[in-house]
Structures are given as structure tokens and as C-alpha cells.
Amino acid sequence: MTASGLSGCPSRCPQLPFSRLGSRHVRVMAFSVAGKSKQGMEFLQVKRRRVQLIKSAMDASFGDMANDSAAVFPRINVKDPYKRLGISREASEDEIQGARNFLIQKYAGHKPSVDAIESAHDKIIMQKFYERKNPKIDIKKKMREVNQSKIVQTVRGRFQTPSTKFIIKTSLAFLVLGILTVLFPTEEGPTLQVAISLIATMYFLYERLKSKIRTLLYGFGAFAISWLLGTFLMVSVIPPITILKGPRAFEVISSLITYVLLWVSSTYVR
Image (cartoon, rainbow, N blue to C red; front, side):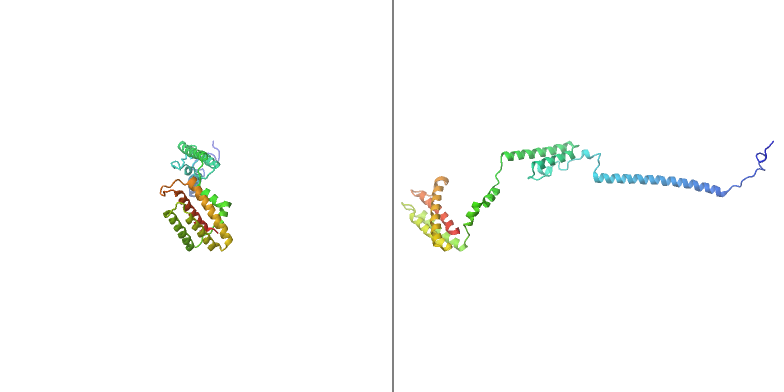
């Protein structure tokens, strides 16, 4: 027995015609799936490239974190300890210590770099210690302090530079007195030449000051101070001079020193 519609001759069974459209649709779906898979692979490759680019950019900006601990100090071979630490010679102890700590922390993974930093730091500290124990006198600074003092400013205010013609005239006068004192010393000493030097001082002071009272005060004061200072220098400071010989050599040299001081007074005193 056969069930109707379920069994029987195959020729009797209805056969569905083969559809070309269905086969083409299957092929299109297969190609579509394959295309999506290919696009997915390309998308993954693009993502990987972007990650690599971002990582390279971060490494270029911030350095390779894996190799940062082994960074080499770029000034490791610089001989000057101040230049090696990157500080000036006027840096304070806090600045020196701060530079050392910063560089040690940055190049801690490289032992030669650490040794070079420590060596420069030790040299600077020892040099500072030596300078404190043996202070160096700054001559320029001392001269500047002396020139800026009130006493020196007051003394300098009492002097004034005259004309070149007046300087030449006073210089020739006292030069002639000095030559006469050396060439013609007397047994009594250069008394006459000293008296002439006082008269010359009075004359030149009056020519500049135009005041008799000030001329007398300045003239006798300059003469007394010059003679006392010349005698003091000969006794306490200037060693014996063998060029000038004779019983009056001491008075002659004292007179020459006095002439120089009188020339300064008569030429530059305001």
C-alpha cells in the first residue's frame, strides 16, 4: 500500500523546476560573506598599524620607558665640573645639591653616568670648602669699595684737573727745583730750594684759587704735610738709596719727595 501523495512513482511526484535565480543568489551570498571577511582582516590590520603609530609617537615624545633607566649622561666626558652639572660658578650650595640630585635620579640606571655626576659634585664641594678656608682677595672689588667710600669721595672732591698748559708749567717748575737740589747740595741742606718750592706753591695756588686767604692756608698746610710725609717715608718705608751719596743725601731725597707732593697740591687742589 502506498499513501497518496507520499509514495509512488517518482515520475508522478511533482518536481520543482531548477531556478537559476536561486543558484545565483547563493553565489552572491557566498561572495558577500567572503568580502566581509576580507574587510574585517583589513580593518584589523589598519587598527594594528594605528596602535604601532601611536606607540611610536609616544616613544618619540616621552622616551622609551623600558630603556629610560639605562640612559647615558650626555656630558659624561666634560672636564669642567660646573659645566658637567650644568650650573654657574656663582651657584649656591642648594643649587649645586639640587643639580646633583636631579641628574642622579634621571641617570640612575647607568653607573658610569652616576660616577661622573658624583665626581663633579665632589670636586665643586671641595673647591668651595677650600675657598672658604683660604679666601681670595678680589682687588678690583676692594678698589671699588674704597673709591665708593665717603672719605675717598670727600678727598677726591677737593681735587680738580686743570688745563694741560697749567700742568706743564707746574711740572717744569718743580722739575727744575729737583735738578738743582740734586746737582748743588749744600752743607746746610737744600734750604734755598725748599724755600723756593714754597713760594712756587703759593704762586700756583693763587693763580688757580684767586683768594689770598685760601692760598696762604692751602700753601702752608700743603708744605707742612708734604715735608712731614716725605720725612716719614724716608725713615719708615723707603729703603736707603745708594745712588745719592753724601752727608746730606737724606735731606735731598726728603726734599724730592716734598717737591712731588707740593706739585700735586699746587696743581690739582680745588
